Image (cartoon, rainbow, N blue to C red; front, side, top):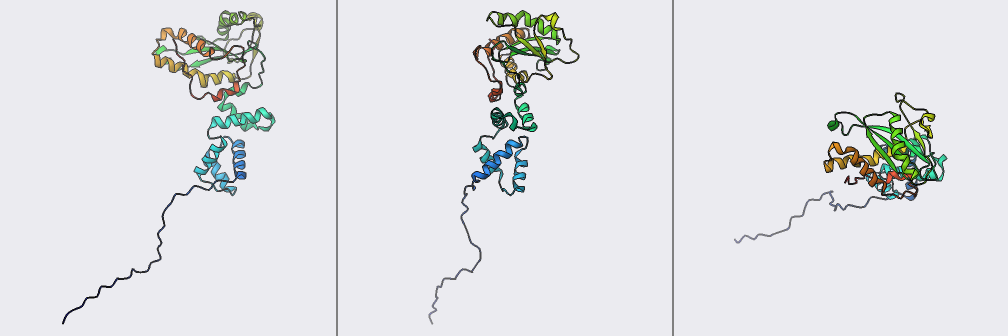
Length: 287
């Protein structure tokens, strides 16, 4: 007897599993109304980080991922502290009364020049701020503390400075009469009013003994603090880059300040509130 074999297809067992292609879909974008809410929240609470913002939005019924929040902040132009600070400054310019104490403190921390917002000037040489600051950057080479006597014109940002081991105010004012005052006299400017902040232990001369206009500030100059934060590191970076000998420190600093002052016109007003836009350090050749 001949065997016959029949080939039949065996059906697959039934299953409830379904297979889908995992396609990365774009995240849903927040509505314009929620963007306004996010912007207002960021401006009202500038010290909050992204995690605290997300927690606050969740409790307010606005569900966001970190990626969505960053996308919205990028769209609104407030991704960095500097950008957020600039946005708050624009609000202040429109109406100073709109900002609270926390917003003011945030601006002053990011851009110290904002502290001098009430010091108005109308011409070059009208008011100069002075401060003697301490620097430890060169202590490994100098083997001692060095102080920088800084004078800055509030109108055009012109800066004059002197390295000295002496931090006393009379030392700075003596150098001012010798170097800075003739600079303005040669440009037919009136004697500048010097606004200074000095520590209690620093000896302070009387106005009659100096024969010049002096006015004490209640706190250190924000303009000088901004210069120290954004600009001055470029000088020390230049010392390192060009391996400048310590014996040429005063000459190098004088040349560097001359190059820095030459970047702006003497008769043009420089907005101190815009110092925040200078990202990084301005490194100018010391030669």
